[in-house]
Length: 203
Image (cartoon, rainbow, N blue to C red; front, side):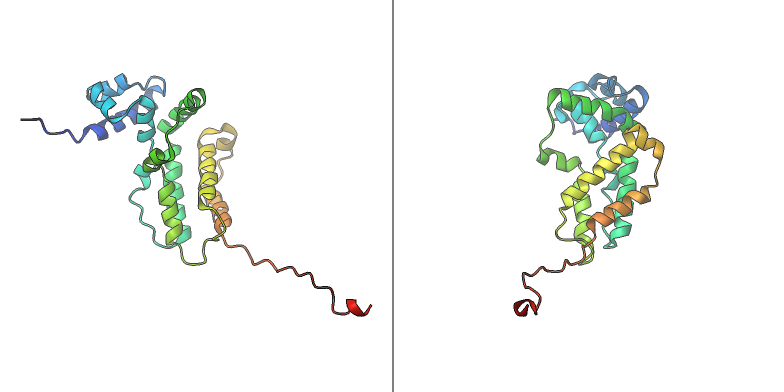
């Protein structure tokens, strides 16, 4: 009779990864260290994650913090809650410890997940859900929401990782205001005509 599958392995491994990142940093957060901390055999980790980079990425997934958010249709309120959770994820000690190492890994190896692989651990789908739930006319249809999310991602990363930005310590509400401005419908532009003044033919 086969042994029942241990459904706590993922939870224990992800928690151990976050603990180690905060305590010893990215380089020392190895699969072996996670295995020992979580009391999980290394082979079980490798069956779930092909590398420690994949494990760290999943552990830092912002969807864990915002997955329970249900859009209310109030665009400002929903974006404020989203932004606070998103910024809290990337501003955590574990994320601050991991991001420089992850970025160096991406640049040195060129190895990154495909878009389809990123989506399950990305907050982008939740952001798009918020925009879809907004009242009609609240979001400019000409604005690409993926572009707005990319700008938001950059702003949140900068607030967490770039020393000069961290030192400014600007209220998160300012970032929210900028996002809302990017999404707001633009005033209609007066149509141009090639007509000459009415008296031009009589000059």
